[in-house]
Amino acid sequence: MEIKTNHKIDLSEGITILPKSVKRDNKTEEKYVEGILYKNKVGRYEINKEYGLYDGSEVELQLCGTWVKTKILLLEGVKYYAEGLNGMSLTNVLARIKL
Image 1 (cartoon, rainbow, N blue to C red):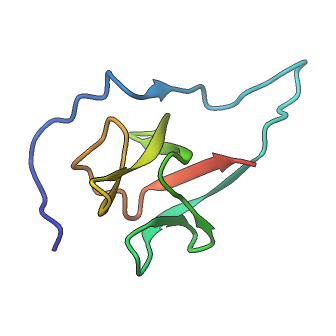
Image 2: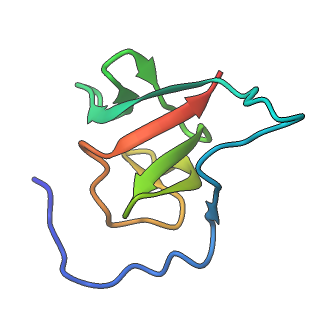
């Protein structure tokens, strides 16, 4: 059972705000897998039910129209969450990872 709380989350520690696109020599070089986060049967998050995220996986989440860089961490060996966003449900959040 997921408990929803109605409190503000401090995003100032543990995350970095990223630009919408990264360009080098006037070319966008970085490639990403992008999609919706789902929680699989064992409680891990996956992008588009294909790319599994594990403890320590670096991921970017789109929050309020801004890409935010964070890590997926495992809390006490039982619950996955995004660093700096503990308590926030990540299900159905748009996410991307670098290839």
